[in-house]
Image 1 (cartoon, rainbow, N blue to C red):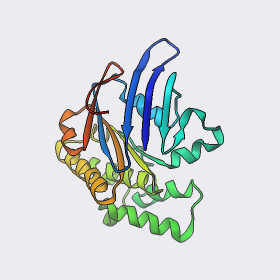
Image 2: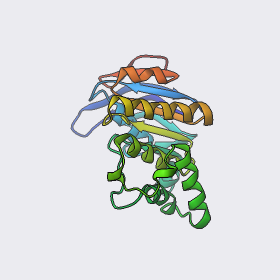
Image 3: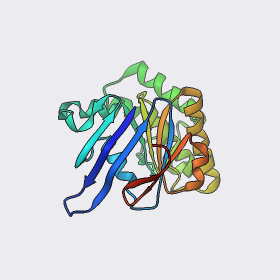
Image 4: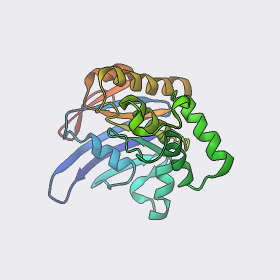
Length: 220
């Protein structure tokens, strides 16, 4: 599903975010990429959604060489990849239901399909009873579950979670991690999670440790 083949990323100021990184994620994997702030973890996310391009090496996402994709196919790539962020990025003036449904509407879906798919993922994350609440009426853990539902609603091949527990307390962190593990075990969802918390790695199939832009530990 994901291959980084000898990937380096050098920014215009001369800073290397990644150096000679090799990562392989198979369908159905649950992989944690662990490291301190500045280790290069978020650059991996940016490469996978083609927000930036590698300086050298190849980035393959579900069979597509990301750097070689024409601009017109970038939206198609991004529909294959659901992304969950640390700060939720929910629309504050829209309900839980509307936040999730919006992800379908902007990709051209409508009518009964929007209703059915939105209800499906809200049930999946256990928020059916909260569908008409607004984000400020939810706990942090509930808001992150809404963000996960929104990321899943378009049936992405891959779920990328960028520090999804970074703003949560211990209890809510465990709830979100348990949900991700359940999605992986029950549905076979391929997940790559970025985190600075090494304790979270107990939930994953495999953990890769990054330091100074390199993978320094773990089976790649």
